[in-house]
Image (tube, rainbow, N blue to C red):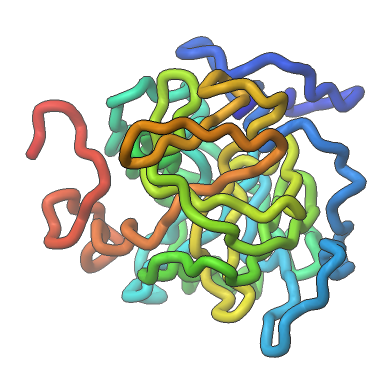
Amino acid sequence: MRKPLLATLTTLTLGTAALAGTTATATAVPSGGGQAASAVATPGTQPDSGTAIPAGARAASFAGTVALSNCSGSLVRMPNSQPADPALVMTNGHCLETGFPSAGQVITGKSSTRSFTLLNASAGSAGTLKANEVVYSTMTDTDVTLYRLTKTYAQIQQSSGIAPLTLSSAHPVQGHAVNVVSGYWKKVYSCSVDGFAYRLKEGQWTWKDAVRYTPECQVIGGTSGSPVIDTMTGEITAINNTTNESGGQCTLDNPCEVNEQGAVTVRKGIGYAEETYGIPACFTTGNKLNLAAAGCALPKPAGTR
């Protein structure tokens, strides 16, 4: 993960500055690695991963993705969300405007005035969305922030023609083709799910059962929070969050895999995403967060059960 790109860039500087604990602002560059941007597709084109698009796979589209000041994200719905429900935007925990949550920290119900640029299928602007609440944010076990918006899905679709992306409630599948769709860069990375890391450690943070990409997804800074879309279902299966940039072991910008026996594996240049299939179980009628709901395994704030 990286400290963010300034909202107004005169030059692209990815540098080597890592996550800086609690000093981050909405000007830090998120993770994604330091690979050249030429490895990704431009708006309106198919991803160029060097592999054929599988039969039945859905073409990449930016519709429903969003651009933040420093990250990527998406307008999302749960499988049971209704048109009249307040809409949600999903991005990484380390993209939170107030700074990176510490290991073990869970933030819920915090007011927010953050805005997002909603994109259409060809990566053009479909309008601005505004949040009024950080519903949930953490970098423990996973790396996610969910914002509640001031409008419902129906209102957004009526004004923009854009429908939300659906969070799959099924575990990602090894070997499935995926598109990592970055609203910040308006670029698509195409690869497959190579496998899963039992634990993924980076600095003070540990994530569970992380998705490991095949090498084609050379994600860069600014792609943090991008939805990882299963090309067979068109649903979100994970959220992009980091890459091992220089071969370091378990350090900032250099996550490592740790298996059940504690053995450490380093995969230089390989990117990772955090699974999202467990999130829908934590949202009830009206898109309300309920961390006590049956089947909800998201980490809870300290002092709650």
